[in-house]
Image 1 (tube, helix red, strand yellow):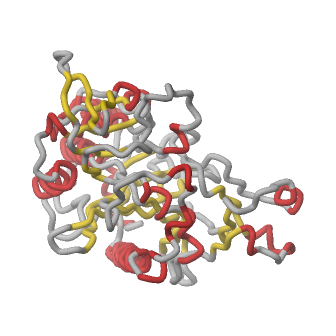
Image 2 (tube, one colour; image 1 turned 60 degrees about the horizontal axis):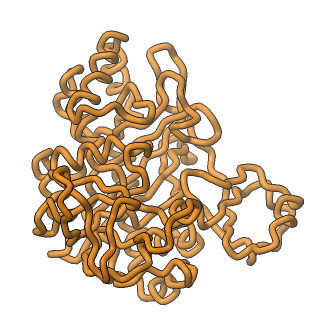
Length: 394
């Protein structure tokens, strides 16, 4: 997206350097990623960076408005209400398709959001590996003038909130089988917190415990939650097992309710130049315009159930239209040039953390996904110059 930076990197790129880079990504946490790692950073121009900041700050402001907060509770089915919700989500992430504006310049268009922790520690690994394998002086993966040590310090403060790391768990379903597992390895390495499978937790009254490496029963005082209820309730669990819905004597670093409140449910309420029109399926009446929209179920994740080319017949088969939205299609621009001349499409996730001292969100870094198909998904895109990676600013 910045031609001179792209040329500078592509001239350095060799298969040998890429092997070195991929090895180093694994080495830092002693863990091989469960997804294809993009061979290159995405160089984000100052112009695009400004647009990403403008869009993210505007969306965050709209989500915190009194108008939206009064209706956000409707996003959560009654049987998925988790007790002890905090006033604001600790984490925010906005996914932007990179398109071209009328001047043929890169422009972000919002396609998804979550009030949920993103990958944080993979970016640290990828940045360290890129710096070791290539000449990338003068670049940074962080917004503002943030350093790597400051980035990790902010993560530590947000996730631990001054609790003992041994009593702060990162909670997930079968964590080491998840595609995001390298991030859990990073959290364990850099914050020294245990990574806990929700099925291994022990509930006694309203106290929650896990067994440490010495098999000692250890109290859980703070939960960095990575469990998605939709995934959890598609699995069979014992009736006495902790499933997020019980009230427990523990703090949340990322309360589960925000995953749904700040999700596809919110898209129809977001306005702006960088937010494509979205509408609840129940409110859609223009049947001739269906070809210009994507159909998305609200209660799903990782692209499950998305219909890129919905038809009237598909929509007529949906009996309960409440949990669906239609979102105006956007055209991803093939702008990531490989040394072999191939072009890939790009999606940029902007990651924010709430600064509780200042009662505002701080832009942290990005997560990039690149692909050559219609859906940008690291499971589907396995070709060269596709996968999950990081963005760099100059």
